[in-house]
Image (cartoon, rainbow, N blue to C red):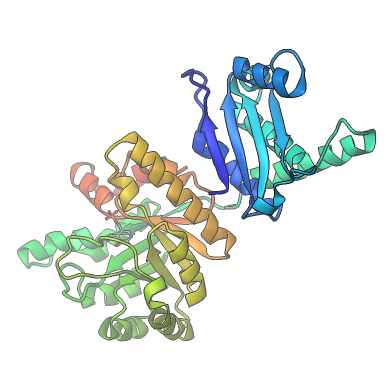
Length: 389
Ligand code: PXP
């Protein structure tokens, strides 16, 4: 864990998004080519920073940011990869942000960059030219940090499996997932997803064949990597496939693929699909090992499993799961993979995931279909799209 983060700013107001601050610090390490270095970051109040200012710098009163570098002098800790400590007073940051008309988080970001540059040897107090050098580097890093990665709006791909589930419950021909897919597209969905399971419990071969002809946006075939379904996919030629683990007894896909444990096998499947012009997405847990393996296996996309985030029992757990997703998406994006996400997303938890600018598309099924029963499919899709802006 390269950023040792402590928040000792106990007041409830203003509220600090700790995850965002910590992620900024982690990105600074990456942007300056030191992903394995460590730094400690402390969010403090005026009193605490004034005490540190007095005991370490012999200066009176609080200040906005302090940096204690360990990279210089005889005690250099570079061998240990520890850059040093940054302390930020949230109280001063909040006052300065208000005065400058900035959000607290953008100002915290500025202070963090400033403190970070001090840690790695920049010092604007040394000379005029050093002040210019530091200012320029600050601007460069801030620009990188605030650069939006996704230029287009996030897309919604609707999974219509549950329409087929209802049909199969009666063994009749209604409701038809093919018709449902058309309604989703008319309402603004930019992709249709179906999972053709080995046991054909909901979607049938006929559905996929018809969808191949009728879907105007993009047909994403979710599937287990079994020979029968691989052959079917190669025959149908969907716009992309998403490989998922499949167990007969599960109600829905339970976890991400263990890509790291079957890289060779998955690479062979990916190669076969790519040879037929079909890009492959691997459904993975938000886990660095799996992202790296997906890249090695030659996947074009990863779909990050949002199930644990969606099922989290409380806010704290949800925040932790969100962090895992955000950093996995970041890592995948930086590695050159295209990033989708999905599973368990609903009308309450989707906005936060949709705001991650590393993610291109969300795959959502159950929540939309459940709402569609009450308000109609067209409205259910439009309401979800409204939350993804
Ligand atoms: N992504 C994948 C890989 C899935 O297996 C599923 C479930 O079929 C979804 C997304 C959609 O999940 P949900 O129905 O919970 O929205």
